[in-house]
Amino acid sequence: MKTLIVTGSDSSMHEVLDLSVSSKQKYAFNHGYDFMCLRSFSADKKCGFDSRHIGFLRATTCFKLLRQYEHIMWIDADALITNPNYKISDFVNEKSCVTASYDWMHYTTFSTGNFIVSRNDDTQKLFDMFLQISRFWLNDILQEQGTLNYIYSNLPEYKHMFNILPHKFLNSVPSCLINTKTWREDNNRTGIVDPWTPESFLVHLTGTSASERVNLIKEYWPNL
Image 1 (tube, helix red, strand yellow):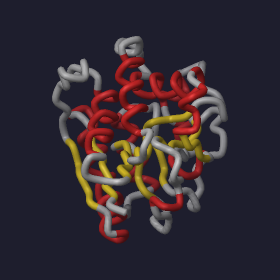
Image 2 (tube, rainbow, N blue to C red; image 1 turned 90 degrees about the vertical axis):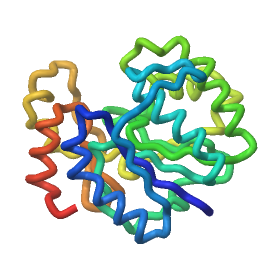
Image 3 (tube, rainbow, N blue to C red; image 1 turned 120 degrees about the vertical axis):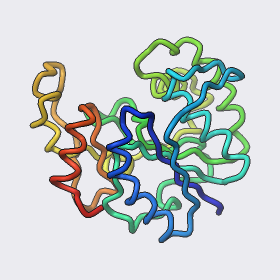
Image 4 (cartoon, rainbow, N blue to C red; image 1 turned 135 degrees about the vertical axis):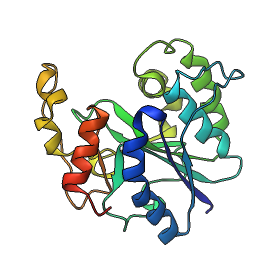
């Protein structure tokens, strides 16, 4: 099972990436996975995405790399692996093309901050539909997450291609985010469902500023 771990960001998150990358490198090395870190994203004119579409670009990058790998795990720059005992094989199944966890506030839609794409007989079909549906999400803040959730929720013939896991695996968000200025000032924020614990595979510092992410990593996870 040839597997690749990919992380990255544009320049706005490089300081966060610099602090989080070692946890992913160590995880990949210890499990015998290949590792890749992207520090910029080029436009993909063939797929219809420019350099602003980072969400789409990271997804298409992972799908295309499946020509060389069986499984590719994308991990956001603002996520750190906190329980490296898990293997990719603990998350995926033979039928799924996309493996992800529910979003932090509910059990309805899933997050693509951290996800796995897998190669099987359905993967190209899903990728083609992803590119088709993405046309309607180009200017939406959710980009690839909105596109994949639309396919999952509205196209029944594609639903079996998705494997949606509990929060603790690929989208474990810590309670300490509630105390950040960004979260306090956002009146639409609700409570975190199933917040991060040391048993979680990773911790995801989503929805806050780069500087707040840096401070949280230095305070709570300085040795990862």
